[in-house]
Length: 182
Image (cartoon, rainbow, N blue to C red; front, side):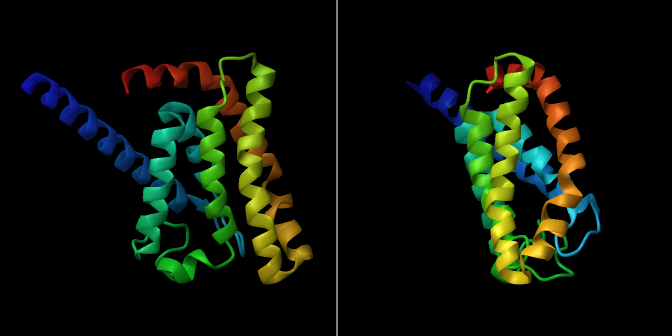
């Protein structure tokens, strides 16, 4: 009985540690950026999908939700914080739709079986990243107009996203091995 409690405690502690490590990686990826306006180019889309692949959809969703909670309460975890605001006021700004897209993105990357061939992995990871844009661009367009949203919310990011997708698709099989230790 006591051994079972110890094992459960260790498992819970390990999962909490992985979630906090994931939010730390997301924060670091948000701070490494190319300063575009109104949406900076960061490594966050890469890390969101990486979290989904390595942690799976349950821990991945928990990680994203904790990250969004950290930002909502005012911790400077997002790109451009604290200089461009913090908390909920930042989250309803130009990048708010992209942040919400992280939820669906991590779910897709963590839920769909990625033990397929390279082309299927590329397509699934593309879909996973695309949902970030599907929620982000309309919100950005609502705030700044469709012309600006197209140029500064899609066009300038395509090549970088293709590069990120390619790296993830090529390394997915190795990343999936990490799930065995969770």
